[in-house]
Image 1: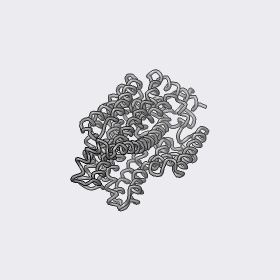
Image 2 (image 1 turned 30 degrees about the horizontal axis):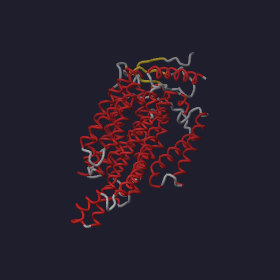
Image 3 (image 1 turned 90 degrees about the vertical axis):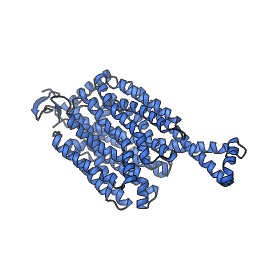
Image 4 (image 1 turned 45 degrees about the vertical axis):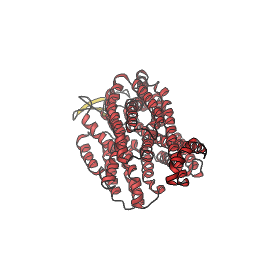
Amino acid sequence: MPAHRFTRRQRGGFHVTLADTVSGPGAAGFHELHPDTGVPWVSVAVVVLGAFMAILDTSIVNVALPKLMAVFAVDATRIEWIATGYILSSGVVVPLTGYLGDRFGRKKMFVFAIVVFTAGSALCGLAWSNDTMVGFRVVQAVGGGMIMPLSMSIIYSLVPREKIGMALGLWGIAIAFGPSVGPTLGGWLVDRFDWRLIFYINLPIGIVTVILVMLLLPALPKRPHLKLDLVGSILVAWGAFAFLLALSQGQDKGWTSLYIVTLFVSGGFAFILFALWELGHPEPILDIRLLKNGVFTLSLAATALASFGLFSAIFLMPILLQNLLGYTPLQTGLVLLPAALTTGVFQPISGRLFDKVGAFWPSFAGLAMVVWTTYRMHTLGLASSWHDIQLLLVLRSVGLGLGMMPTSTAGLYTIPQPLVGRATALNNLVRQIASSMGIALVTYVMTSRADFHYNWLAGTFTYGSPAAAAAWHRLSPPLGRQAAVGALYGVVQRQSFALGIDDAFVVGAALVALALPLVCFMTKGRVDAARSRALAAFASRTSA
């Protein structure tokens, strides 16, 4: 009997496609659920709710870090572990989600992830010290790290491939909306109420989501006899941990310090050994052989480069608004809110375009707009108005809404259904490491260029310079000569910091621009051909 033949049966309003004639470790026990009447929007919306809760928390907590420094009486170095511990733990968990979803069923693991995340949120709200907070954030990250890749793979299980764009467009709203709503909501809760509410707010959302998932999400397939690739799990976990830790602490410890270099080298060796091990393993924790799919590999690379640009603005804009322009966290969130709403509007539009015309046109047009607007942000400075900043961010969000989802979806579209869980885990791991690399890079550019501009500007303020003479005339009588000098150099420091941020925006735009040539290989014809080759290769491999 041919290895690629499938049978069908009816169950609960869904067509169940059983891969019961496909042999081999890669396919046994898999089936797809496809709704009889199109996309099951209720089920998709429930999955998006869980994803939104997880992504919201990553941004809402950052607003509260200065408050937590005072509450727990710790310095910035120790308080950073509240964010770093979450990043490291979720990075270690992400590669395992493909196996766990296949082994125990994606619906069960999704419920488990939400329960763990919600319980971790409750514990964080009860934290009485910085150390306990870091520990409870690790618990929260175990659930949060699993939610995103599981939610993607569940949507791929529920939605027919020819309609996947619209479904992932709705899912993309969670990714785009969460980081912008988080600062607004977090600033409001911290300023007006209690910092513990930024964690307790997840409790009702988590409970409602679990109930809705249990009631509305259909049962999804599992492979109960699948064995864990323990060696591969350890290698990829250490590689992700080492790289994310180095990227998180490189700016503070020094990029050439023995500590950071050791982390990068050991993490790099772990990834190399992991790749070699996985190529020979019958049931890999992450299927490296997926990278033989050219469209999928180009999609990962383009998504990584686009993530650099995405997180450059997410990271730099609050610094510009709060540290230099004096906005409160709540005001910062209100500045960012229209951009988030714009992205939310254009995500479903890009999904519809993907289903109709493929990935190339919306991806190229969207990313080109991101390049232009991110570059234009280098003109922002101390004199920029609220409305000027909002306009640039809204235009940039049009590009993000159009370009990000099709770029990522083009690769996953070509992956056979039984491998989607591993592919989404790999996609999310690459995205997470790329985001951390982007933040580390723009931070380095910002600080180094700020120092450069400070030295140059400070050198122009001599006692005989026209600017200095005007300042002495204005400041010296009321402040005295020494106070005037201090005020002048304070202005220089703020201006050099703003110029450093502007230079970092230029670098972010350049990185996104590197993704444009890659997108040119994601035309509809190339993507469809890659999907056909991947399905044929999978059928051939599983029949062996």
